Length: 84
Image (cartoon, rainbow, N blue to C red; front, side):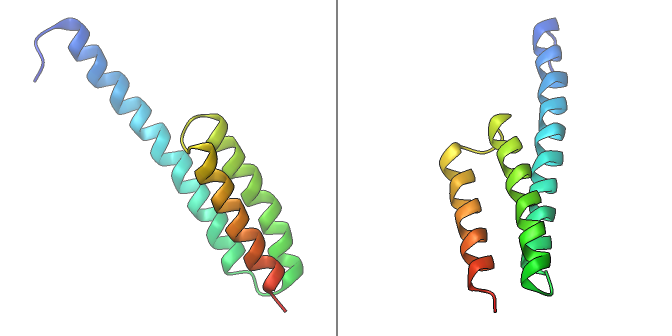
């Protein structure tokens, strides 16, 4: 355990940021699963719009790199477009 006051604060801040990052990543995973588990194309499109929004928010907050966010959105869009 840290003895210096600033080191103690860094531990607390890091824990708080880690929790925030986990929460946002979890919401992205949930949104992606809703797209992948959609029963029909229309339902998937609605879920895709929501997933894109969630991914963009995570990217703007620095959770994902912009290329990672772009790749995730692209793969989801291709998946929805290929649905029958």
